[in-house]
Amino acid sequence: MAAAPVWSVDPRTGKQREQVAVEATAQEVDAAVRAADEAREALTDRTVRAAFLRSAADELEAARDRLVEAADAETALGPVRLTGELARTCYQLRAFAGIVEEGDFLGVVIDHPDDTATPPVPDLRRYKIPLGVVAVYSASNFPFAFSVAGGDTASALAAGCPVVVKAHPDHPALSELVAKVIRRAAAKHQVPDGVLGLVHGFEAGVELIRHPMVAAAGFTGSVRGGRALFDEAAARPVPIPFHGELGSLNPVVVTEAAAAERGEAIGAGLAGSMTLGVGQFCVKPGLVLAPASAAGDALLKSLTDAVSDTDPGVLLDHRMRDNFLAGVTERAQLPDVESPVTAGAGGDHTVSAGFLTVPAERLTRDGDHDLLLEECFGPVTVVARYTDEAEVRAVLSRLPGNLTATVQLSSEEAAGQGRGAELVRELTPLAGRVLVNGWPTGVAVAPAQHHGGPYPATTSTSTSVGGTAIERWLRPVVYQGTPEALLPPELRDDNPLGLPRRFNGRLER
Image (cartoon, rainbow, N blue to C red; front, top):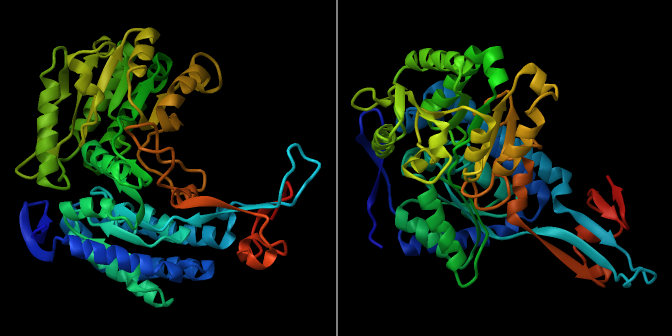
């Protein structure tokens, strides 16, 4: 594997800014994974893990100005957006520190012997242990929250798993800076630098997923790239869990009653959601089912006005810009597809937002219009005009898995009258998060959050956001008939660590 230079590129001009590193060789990938494996012992103490995560948040905040400047230079996402994303990342690190200290994630269950049960129950003690080294593949559109110090890394470290990150080529300089900050935090707690490895390059990413000491992987990116890595993970002599977020259309259904009641507000809200971050959010609404009626016309007028007033923006790189322009052009050329506001080139390096319309009937059967049921990354959405509820059900039945699904209801429907409950039930199988009278952009970091969904939204049933993301990097183990002196402290009767647990069928906290 030949080493090639890694450049920081300005997306506003397409010009190289500076050489950051070189692509990692197979030997360098191996060294990074082995160093990570050697750091596992330093993460066994939950007190150390929690303190490390909090120090990582503190160090990121201390370096905020420099990090935001570097991120903006490589992504053009803007200081306001990036400052908020960094704050979210720090909050997430501290939230996992609290989860580690609480200990509930260990799932401790102790059953004493019971000869009266059928069949008899021996002494059983169950909890969860870390899998080992985790490979993390950074995302382009969240240079903090889904990158080197993002949710995959934070949850893996919280679980006790060291990490090797494959840096995203759209922000290599920022990746190096963040890795140094995290290692600085690790050093404060005598945790080796190897606890967070960083490699660059496409081939390095392939070598990483194949490495026999890598125990699991997390990925956020395209369907094509994610599926290739997923297949590599499954084809290994010892397959490993691959938690990939690949792609999502995030459908929205607007009822006739909702359009009649507040069509103007729905149109404006849709415009804000689909153009947020230049349409580069994984939960951007990409397909909207709206009524082909006067109320639907009013919604489209509001959408037209709002999207027309949106300034052109810079996409994360020129490859994405080219794909966006080609994707919009291909979709707009399909029969019966119209462009009330044409998305396209806003300048040499920018794109303008727009949307397409199509009769929903065109999407109810296999054919040339299947392209409209695929994600187009950037500031564009498709509005499918339906004439009756049967068309809505027919289109929904053809959709792949999604991260989110949204329904816009009238006040009466939201109160339980009409088809509100039925639509919620119809959308539930399609997505990991179902919204009523809201917009999917904005994923709160909260204990109850679920950021995942049926394939191709994700390759597993887990979440990459929220406290339960830690579960991806753990596996349960049971000790049977094991003397107390040989048990880990988490499973001893006297509970020296004060863990929440289920003890002989009773929940103890």
